[in-house]
Length: 209
Image 1 (cartoon, rainbow, N blue to C red):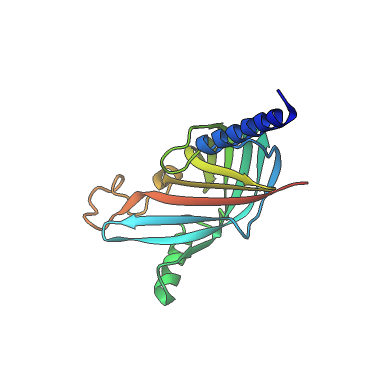
Image 2: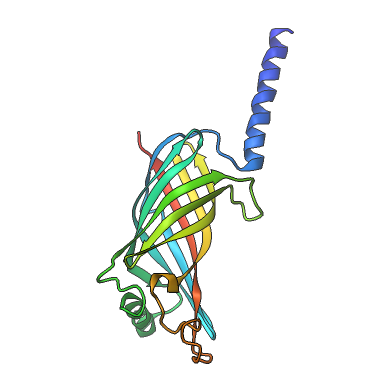
């Protein structure tokens, strides 16, 4: 084999490896610790009732993700519950709902201002239709109550920036949020709120040099 053929073969191998990584959605570099960029990260939520829904955001206060062996090894982030924001309302209606969400009926943010999610296990998976290439389980602590939550997520690394996105739901009653829950108060008629809160998480993290 001449030098030109040898170089061509190496190039083809590299292309195949990169193509396989792209096809499976699995990262092939990036080991190290990553500090969550709180300005670029956020958590969107949707709460539904029989007659409609409300949507909004929460700010990420801090977080760290760790890559090792070319895989997600661990991670933890904090959510500032005092920043709960309703984006589909304006004026007095918006203020009233946000204040209600902060009080004891819901998240009681004066006593429990911070919620945390700590990854306890994770693994790579073949990319699904939603673009997820990882699964993760973690301890989600809110209002002083901890429950295990399982999520699928998309993780990608571009240069020194790691981005993790995920869509998942939590059952609010597991964290003691029982307000107008039909599963707890069956006689509410059509005045109930659904137990599941839909979450859309985006974490952008910079590699710690």
